[in-house]
Amino acid sequence: MTRGAVVFLLLVGMVMGAGPALALDDLTPYLEQQSAAEFSGEESIVCYTPDGTVSELTVVRQADGVRVVEDGEGAIGVTRVYHGDNWVLGDQYRVEVSGRDRFLSRPVTVVDVVEGDLVRVGLFFDQSSGALLASDVHNADGSTYCSSRFLSFDPKRPVIPDDLLAGLTTGPGSSEAGVVDADAFPTEIAGFSLTEVYEGPAAGVTNGYYADGIFSFTVFVSERAIEVPELVDAPVVKMRRGEYQRQFYPGQVIFAWQTRSGGIVLVGDLPLDLQEDVLEALPAPGKPNFFVRFWRGLFG
Amino acid sequence: MTHLGELLSAYLDGEVTEDERKLVTSHITDCGTCQAELADLHLARSALRSLPVLDLPAGLLDGEASVVIPLVRRPRVWIAAAAATVAVFVGVATFVAPEPTVPITFNEISLEHNNRSQLDPLLTPGKAVPPVSLPIGGAE
Amino acid sequence: MPEDVPLSWEEVARTHGRKIYNFAYRLTGNPDDAADLAQEVLLRVRRGLASYQPGSFEGWLWRITRNAFLDDVRRKNRRPTSALPDELDRFAAISTPSPDDVLASLRLGEDIQKALLGLPYDFREAVVMCDVIGLSYDEIALASAVPVGTVRSRIHRGRKMLREALL
Figure 1 (tube, rainbow over the protein chains, first blue to last red):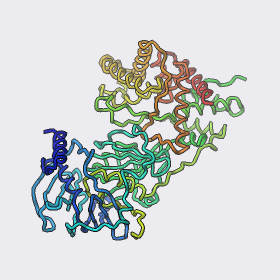
Figure 2 (cartoon, each protein chain N blue to C red):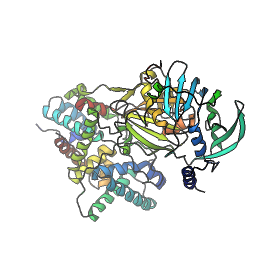
Figure 3 (spheres, helix red, strand yellow):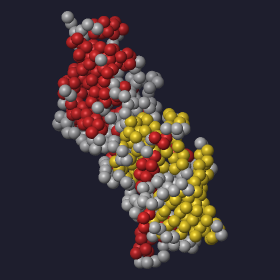
Figure 4 (spheres, rainbow over the protein chains, first blue to last red):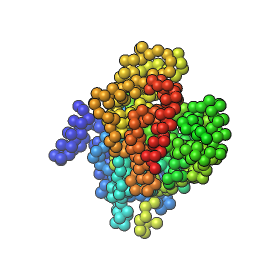
C-alpha cells in the first residue's frame, strides 16, 4: 500500500470516526494521539555534542492542543501542538514498531524511525494517553545525539491559565508580514524540503524553513554579515569548507558564518552528521570581496 | 599625446606584456584623461563582476542539478596591483565601505524557527522546548 | 593532455553546467532560453567529447557554447531577446523587498543586465566571457574564432559602452 493510500484511508477513517490505528508502520496515528494527549510532567533533555554535554529540565503541560513549557528560570514557551496536516515524512525514513516496553511504570509502544541500517530516532509513546514519554536521536555512527525523558508524568488534564494562552503564537512564523519569493531559496537542501520562506526577523534578512518530517532547520540569509550578540563568545569550529561559529543548546544547534556575499545563520535540531551535510550544501564561509565592498561604497 | 585606449582594459585584466604594463603605469601618473577612463573601465568591470551567480535550474542535469559549484574566477595576482593603481590614481579607496552587519538576537532566531517547527508534529528534543522567553504578562 | 581536461561528460556537466547557464542567461536575459541553451550545449559536449583534441578545453567548450547560442538565435530567427526576467538571484543574495539598500543593489543588478542586453552581440559576448565567466583573452579568442587583438578591442569597447549605459 502506498503512503498516499495509507494517509487517504487514515483521513477517511478519521472523518468516519473510526479509530486511527489503521497502519502501525505509519507515524501518523501516533502523532495524532500525541497531539491530542493531555498531561503534565517534568522532562529532561540531554544532548551530547563535540563541545560537551548540554541539558535542560523543564516542566511541561499540555491540553487542548496547546503545550506550555517552563524552564527553571521562568522562561515560558507556549506552542500549539501540531496534528499532522501537510506533514510529509522524507523518503529516506521508514517507520517500524519495534515493540512494547515499560517506561515510568507505564506501558509504552516503541516506534523507531529507521534510515538504512540506522535507527535515527527512537520514540516511546504512552499507550494510554498517547504522550511521547521519551525519545532518542542518533548520529549516523549510531551514537546518541539527544535524549529526552519524562522524569515524572501525570496523565491528568492540566490547568493552563488564560494569561498563558494570550502568549500563544498564532501561526507559523512571527514575521507573517513578509512572505517573500520562495524561488530565492533552493527547494531542497541535503534531503530537506523547503516549506516556507519569510522575511525577517530583521530588515534585510530572509529565512527559509526546511524539514524532512523528522528534523528541521531554518536558514537566515542576509546580504550583510549577520551578528548574533549571544554568539559573540561562541566557539569557532573549523570544518571542511571553513570556519563557523557554533553553539549547542539542548536539542538545538546554531551556526553562524559570513559568506562572500553576506551572512548566514542556521538553527535546527539536526544530529551531528546532518549538520555537516546541510552546511556542505550551503554557501561556504568566506570574506566579501573587494568589489562587493567597492560597489556598496559607491552606491550604498 | 596618444592615449592608452584599449591597453587600459587589458591592463585591468592583466592581459598586457611587461613593457605594456610599464607604459601604462608611467603614462597614467600624469594623464588625467587616462586616469578618468581607467576609473570608468574599472567601474564597468566591477559592475559585471558584481552580477549574482545564478544557480542551475533544478533538474537540468538529471539529478546533478543540486551540486553547488561556485563560479570560480581564476586568481590573477595582478588584479590586486591593478586595483591598487586605480585606487591611488583616482582615489577609489575612499569609496570602499566598511562591512555593515545586521544584528539578530538569539531569541528572534529561536522564535522564528520554533514557530515554524510547530508544523512538525514530532516533538523530538528541541521542539519540545522553545528556548525563548515570551513576553507574557505576569508570567515572570 | 592538458590537466584541465575533464574526463567525462558528467564531470563537464557538473563543473561547467552552471557557468554555461550563467553565460546563456547573461546573453539572453531570459531564464527559460538560458536553460534550453545550457541543455543543448551539454548535449553537444556529450556528442563532441569523443572527438575532442587535447588543447584548450575552455576554448573548445566555449566555442561550442557560443555556436549553440548563435544557432539558436538563427533558428528562432530573431535577435537575442532583451526581455528582463523576474529577478532570480543566487541563494546568498536573497531578494528582500523592504530594505532600501537591498532594493538598491537589486535594481543595480537589473540595470547592469539591461545595459548588457543593449550591447551589440560581439561586445556583449566578449565582456560576459571575460567578466562573468572569467576566461582569459586567449580562451575568448579561441571560443570566438577571432584574433586576441580583436578580443582586447571588444572588451574595451564593451566596457566603455556599458559604463555609458550605466550613467
